[in-house]
Image (cartoon, rainbow, N blue to C red; front, side, top):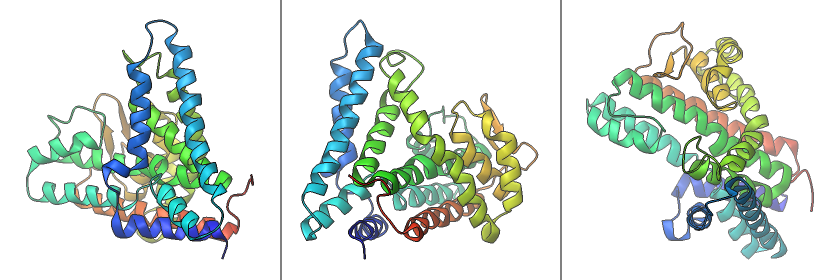
Length: 304
């Protein structure tokens, strides 16, 4: 078996069996520390230019780490380190387990706890969300994370190997920390936000393919396609609407971010049990992505 397929298998096993590594050795945490270092040293002037330099430097460092691991060779040490780093670029287990935990709290009527826990899931005010709105927020987060937390890093692993996956995770980390259209990040985060939009453009649209295929067994594939085509552009992000609208259609539920967007307006509000359905849909879609990589038969497609 090709060495990089072994890396992928071990990375998936690490994710499924053990979840996230400790914070002090988590590569994404260190990516966040590097970003934070740049943010703290940001100048008062020329912040867009500084933000561009930050992106180039940070993404370059992430890709360089991947290249250094490749230089270790195709041996046991290289396999373990590469798998550990690749696993850090995606998260299937944590996403799905966390979503199910919120579903249990909703079933138990613990709405205050749900509102508190949702703060780690979504970038919206959760203090007044009711049951339907909370379920919608979780499902939207699961659907959106299918792209930037699973599909995109694996897409760039397929194309460019470990350097591609690490570079994408650095781009996404930058965007999550500074890619906001408000001060103090509007200028320094401009390049990060635009690059993240570009990096997720193809994977976001591919998400409809995977969600529709899985929906043949656990949803409504034609509704997924119809709703996605009709509603994908209703979100502020040019990419997040694709997977969210596809899930809304597949499960025939109405997903709403109050004051911002409604996806699948013709359907009923989601209930807590729809969270489990969304988890299964995204979970199987994720493993379909992995199976697709193996079917292609070569990783990376672009060699070094």
